[in-house]
Length: 281
Ligand SMILES: Nc1ncnc2c1ncn2[C@@H]1O[C@H](COP(=O)(O)OP(=O)(O)OP(=O)(O)O)[C@@H](O)[C@H]1O
Ligand SMILES: [Mg+2]
Image (cartoon, rainbow, N blue to C red; front, side, top):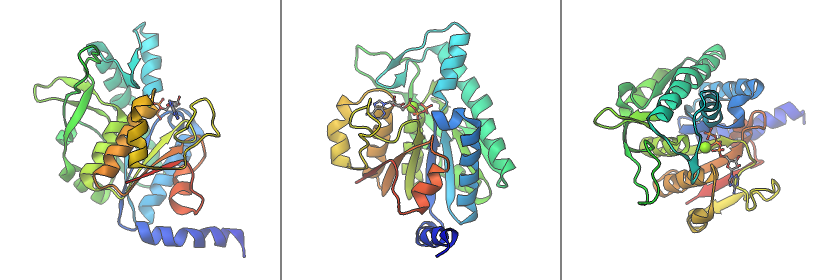
């Protein structure tokens, strides 16, 4: 058989399965810093929309925040994969995420033929946030956790546009917080009852040994993740915590895939070849 036809036929059952379903896709790391990959990502998301899925994009921008902070001579510090955020850090995060990264993604989706609307936690009161509780000896500053997601707003936007979410938001007093984008993606997926939650990152998936890219864990149960969560470090910790929380709150599956691979979203969703790490309840 012609290989192109073969590929289309392979995609068909998946297209049928996903039709009308909401998929939350979080983009971060490498896929956001490489222009070619950003272009491929936009193509993938637009295609999802054309074949009848409802994609919701949530984005990070950690490396860009760090870069601007360094240029401004600010201290950059992480604890347990989360950025320690004083008032000035939150201000920089907001500028980079809302002012630059969010609009770049929106523009890219628009140019590929599907209009997108960029929002952050403040727009339409998408997120209500509170300070993330931490042990007494750790102060992360203004790192927030999401108390409530305005699902109505997302449904309304999704009817005609692709929502693109920057993970900052404010508490009831108007104080802004930096929110880990993985956690934001998880909260959105849970609240809207997504069919899938997909994380694009800069490694092949969850690695049993972070220094060995061939040690990818392809399938993990919630119990397995829960057991290992305490030992995890760096950016994989909030990501797996978000996967765990999502699958335990009714999202059927969460995937961590390599955003450095061109068209990784399409490969993951529409081919038999599973890439990355799949977390299931
Ligand atoms: N066990 C592990 N398996 C895989 N990656 C790990 C592991 N432990 C730590 N990491 C680190 O987690 C990083 C991915 O998280 P990181 O927060 O840096 O990126 P991101 O979440 O994709 O992007 P952003 O933070 O900009 O949204 C990897 O580059 C890797 O260095
Ligand atoms: Mg991260």
